[in-house]
Image (cartoon, rainbow, N blue to C red; front, side, top):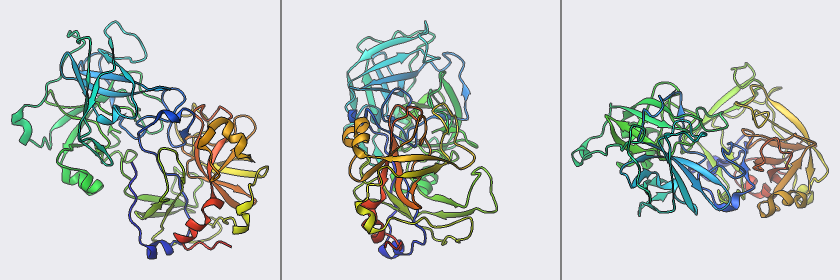
Length: 460
C-alpha cells in the first residue's frame, strides 16, 4: 500500500503548483465492493474491486513446460459476491502454503487446483479440491505486511504423481542462511506486464537472484525485516498482479511466498510502498522526452487525512514540487473553483476529461498521446443508481453518450468545467470502461479548505 511521506506545514505551503492525484487502494477487498473498480487497475474476474490489486505477477518470464513445476498451486478464492485468485505451494498431501493476505477479507471458501498448466482449461492432469478450512498466521499484520503466511487444509489428500509433487521446505540448518546471491525460480499465473488486463492462461516462471535485505531497505526502509527475503532480476523481470502466495524456490527448496514486501528493485512498475514520483509537465506523447516537458522528481506528498481505502472517501492528495514549475505556453495552472462555487452542483455542465489511460476495456497499454473526451456532469442521484452509498456529497459524477468516459490509467486526472478543475478521477463501475456507466470523481469544491491549508494555492 502507499505510505505517505511526512510533510511539514512549511514545506506544504511552498507548493508552487497544485497536483491532485488519485491514491492507489490497498490489495484488500470487502464484499461491499461489488460495483466499484478504482481506475488504476483492471479486475481479472467479474464485477468487483480487484482483490490483491497490488500483488505479484510474473514479468518478463517464460511459459513453463507443462507440469514442470508440479508443486505450484492455483487458489480460486470465493467470496460472497465475487471470486479472485492467488498462488500457493503444495507442502504436504493435506496442506498448501500461501500468503496470509490471500486468506482474509471475509473469504468464504477456496478451490485448490493442483497439477495445472492452462488454468482456464480443465486439464486431465488437474486435481480440484474445494475447502473452507484455512488459517492465517496469528501475528499477521497488513500495515505493513508482516508474518504474511497462511495454510490451507485439503479435506481430500493430494494424489501425488508426475504432475503433482510436494515442494521441499528448508531444513532447520538453513535458518542461518540468507540465500543472498542464490539463483531462484518464481512462478505463477499473474499478469505478464503492468498493462496486461488479465492473468496468464498458462503457468509462467522467471529466474531471479536473491539480494541482500539492506539493498531492499534502501528502497523500502524499516518495513523490510529479517523475516523478509528479497529478489531482483535483470531488466523488467520478476514477480510484480496475481501471483501473491506463490513460490520462490532455491535449489529445490521453498524459501519464500510472494507478499506485498517482496520488492523487485529492477521492475520499476511494481512498487508496494510509494517512495518517490516523477512529475511530468508539458507532455503530449508520454513515451517521448519532448522539448516541452519538465520532469521533476519528488518524494514529498500528502493524502487527505480522512481518506479510506475501503470506501474511497476523501480520495484526494497533493504532491510537492521541489523545483517550481516553469509556467509557459506549454505548462499552465488550472483554475480552482471559488468558494462561491461551493453551492454549485455543476449538473448539466459540459466538461472535459483528459488523460493517457486505456482507450477501451480491451486495450493492452496506456495511450502514448494525451486524449480527451467531452462529458456531461450528472446528478449524484443518478450516479447512486449505479453505485448506491459509494457516491457521497463529496463526489461529482460524469456521464457521456455511449462508451465515453475514463478508463484504467486515468486515475487522478482532471474534470474541467468552464475552465475550472471541478473533479479528480476516482473510480468507475465494474462493468468496465465500455459499460457506459457514470464515472465518479472527487468533488474539488468539497476540499477547498483542505487544499488551502496544505498548499499555497489561492482560492478566491
